[in-house]
Length: 115
Length: 114
Image (cartoon, rainbow over all chains, first blue to last red):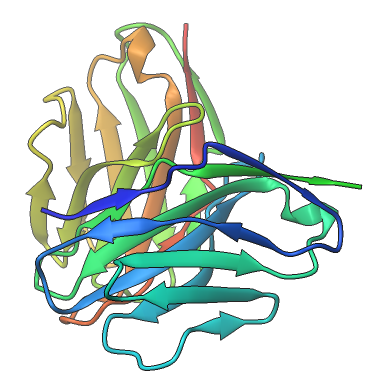
């Protein structure tokens, strides 16, 4: 069974500062993918960034980077230069590479960016 | 633009009155998912289709059914909605194969049960 843990229910960050959202995972499969999604108050889930278990380098997408520490089973999201529009719920998720296509979500972190 | 479309965006139904939510995609993805998300909670997977193969989660109530008549469309039927079924319903798609591909989500349908 796979499990995703997000221990920060809520976070505050000052505008233009960087923030790290924590995510740890547990799986017995050697091949998996880790994702981060953003969900604004409108409800739509927006894909941010992906990290494969065999990727040698940490993923980056613009202001988003994923701090992947495989031995620790952590996949923290780093948002640099926070903007007011970054205020939203952030979900970490995991998918195994097998034929069964289930994705497991964490409980989410609510990020609020302060002007 | 290729996308995942959900209709309607807001749906109000009466207690016990059947309701159908729809999802369509132009991505030609093999896999389509239905999630239920209640306020301040993570999305909860109800079921998914891999092509025509239906995969039901063990804890999905029998009240929830799904149909996928073709690659592009998938429907969620709630046979007798209860007050506890009021939620956001999210449809998502992804490539199949054995890779680890991200899911593309639709904008969701917010269901109210009166």
